Length: 338
Ligand code: TYM
Image (tube, rainbow, N blue to C red; front, side, top):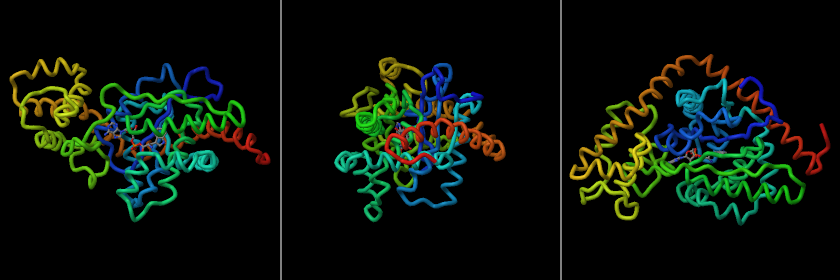
């Protein structure tokens, strides 16, 4: 993409990930995998949601390192910076500005009902800050600034996209058609990858929270070890049953997503075979899925100048589009023109 035009006929796709930990198999299957190859149909905007990370305390040096790694991993996952706008949220000041405005159109009651707020405040009881609470208003700004049509996310972010729609509807109801109504796009397979050590909990980017996470940069031997130790059950039958066989069902979803095999085919292929064979097959499929990503990300990370150039160009393109929306919003609410 050489030039982003606000009046482009293409629809827009937008999504982001917080660099709050290392990207995982969950981040890839639930989100990034569905971002790529869409450039023919959509103008694509993908960002590192760094503003969102500080709702939980971060080590500054780690945050900086992980943020750049995330950019390299986006590219390594197949997002060509010539065809997709890749940028850091903090480089496009319009996010914070529209975030503030939308804070004033997001209701206390609806923010209080957000599952992520409830989870995160339980986990960070000593730091339940205002940002953690108003986070969905910033996320609404991220989406609405670009007049996005489609927002590809995992299952856990659906509630936030729905709130974004409610905020947009409220704002449009007062001021006329300012925002486009975005739709969430949740994949059929891989929308909620669970931890390999605790199949009751979502696979998380943070190692402290999830020792059963597979990251995009894990080496093959580490991946095989994690799958070998994956929690299953005592039945020894590869069958999809998310109620009674959460561990096996999670491994089946991962295997299906990695190989393209249907759940039924997987069940048939493993009739009479033990869990050992199955876990090995799943591990190997993930090793092959992630190998090219790890290798390419490692190569890109050695070229910091290139990454700087990509994110500078991305921020410029993103800012151009974002500013149009922000200006319109400021005018509608009654601010004096600059
Ligand atoms: P975050 O950073 O928690 O997760 C990034 C994306 O990965 C998906 N995901 C998963 N999918 C399947 N299984 C898992 N275990 C798993 N873990 C994460 C998430 O659903 C998400 O799609 N608030 C967002 C970031 C954000 C954003 C936005 C997204 C900020 N602004 C605007 C879309 C549009 C977040 O915390 O995602």
